[in-house]
Amino acid sequence: MFHGPGDLRREDLPVPAPAQGELVMRIDAALTCGTDVKTLRRGHPVMIPKVPTVFGHEFAGTVTAVGTGVAEFREGDRVVAANSAPCARCPSCRAGRPNLCEDLLFVNGAYGEFIALPPRLVERNVVPLAPSLPAERAAFAEPLACALLAIERARVEAGQTVVVFGHGPLGCLLGMLAASRKARVVMVGKAGWRFDRLKHLGFAQWLDASGAGDVVGAVRDATGGRGAEVTVDATGRPRCGSKRSTRSAAAAACCSSAAARRAPRSAWTRGERTTRS
Image (tube, rainbow, N blue to C red):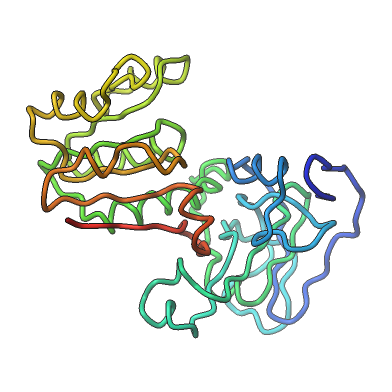
């Protein structure tokens, strides 16, 4: 149970019973997102407006109980659930931007043994799993979808140069997805154990920002002076140089917790901002 910044406690609670339209899941895998870490340190007024409350929001598991009115699922189904669900009624949802929903429903509780999923989530953002897909991988669906949206919004195409600033988990997902579209990827990060290990994955050219006095100049040098068609800020820091590293008629996408603090997040996608010049 989360009782406030720095105060996470183990407590015994009753196993929830499903109300109408709800599902109860047994948690088979739960992940720790960077947002969980930041919330533990300083709280989160949007995802967790009231305390104490259950904690954790990336998970997959098995349906153990089904509420009345639920026809799509039954006990024993393996599923992955989003951590939120849009309302489908506000202007952003009607415009096809549910990640900017004005009445987003957040769901927490991944760190418990069981979780009750509310009707709106069951209707929109619970997905059955193939028998061959491990729960540990399925729980990764939410951050992967965040990266997918950013790559789609930036319109990454084969042959383009994509520069990703930040080599954390989300930055790496963004780079891998861009590479899967046959783009040339340049990852910009800082030297260290993660940087050294990731260089060997082979999906990108790597640029050590801590050793480059002029990061923007180094990016341009790495791209033959042209700059990138697409740059992505996955650092969470407002001044990373992503916009200055792009060519004219290029895209700069922001996919980070910094952007998420400016706009609500959807069930599957983080707040995002794409600019074109």
